[in-house]
Image: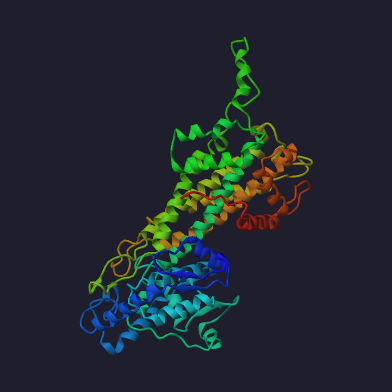
Length: 525
């Protein structure tokens, strides 16, 4: 069995973003639970069942939130859990995509197998069954404020487990009841506390964050590859990416980006040494204007300095997300070893909300950098080298890339608005019990749009760069990295001479850029 096809075995402690990505990409890949967890799960469940008859345990034999002072009798504990799910599965709006749902279910399962949530082995088995059969509940996008976790969105997962609501199964939307009937099982009957354990946590925002972090790695890689090709096109001076220059300002992200640029451009015959300027100082006149640029504009000269902070943000977002993926975010937490219940706030989504706010700001900056370089190559008065809008036929009669620039500019502008931090928009709710909230899942969904927008802008820049290569006819002089990028671009979008509708071609290019392993740069963490 290859490493890629091995089941993802969950222990609550070692789940990685790459595991989530593998499960999304391979519909046949299964999850399992480490044997070491099974004992803890059973002990945790036994302890809560015993203590529920003697102690007041929030959400087990009490009401929820501001109604926690209501004690529920033993005969109604299971009804209480079902009511919790039915009362919270009230989300509205467009369903979030299946990859987010699957990621959220895996993260929730990983939390539960730690054995601190008091759920039964039977619930663990049912959640595994749903994941492995890719029965993916329909989760509407709107509804959660991100404290007590993703209550509303997670309730829609729990709703499907008990055989209600709708799911996606084998590419079609159907009722959970119908799908379970086809698979010869009924809806799961929740035991005491199990409804609360399913919905009390940050698993939806964290699952979406895991998907975003993977996508963002590809975007940062593409941004650096575009930048490398741009440097070759303008025959940049090589000292701008020199090791010493960046070691003298030792920010991790900046050093990593500069290092990547040096590797991508290693052996390039198009970069220039600054020594080529030495002869101009020997002119005898007092002032003498030279034709050559002494320094490139910032979007070319400062790639490492601009992309570097964003890369640092991405790497920190990965660390934060993987920590959250392997955290217990339930309440109360069952400590069966020390015989107590810990009532706290691990369900609060602030870590993920802040991480994704910072990530979407960094991605918005990537799109702004890309849009400015695009403008440089399309503006003949700025570059003094290329035809207007990189028009390869009859400027004036044909449009070149004029239309694509409008798309890039408007898309980058939208990113600027979407990147405003949403985690600061805290409005108290739940009778002021939840008086400071994270808005984490909304941040995650806004980040989805920023990611899609950034792909659009970077793809348009890539088209422009390929046009510039064709104009200069320097395909054979490019570095191997730039040759590979050019080939990928040209597979989706042939050189543009006559005006044609480019929408479908651009979408095909974006799909290729997202999926191509050639684009990915392995960033040290």
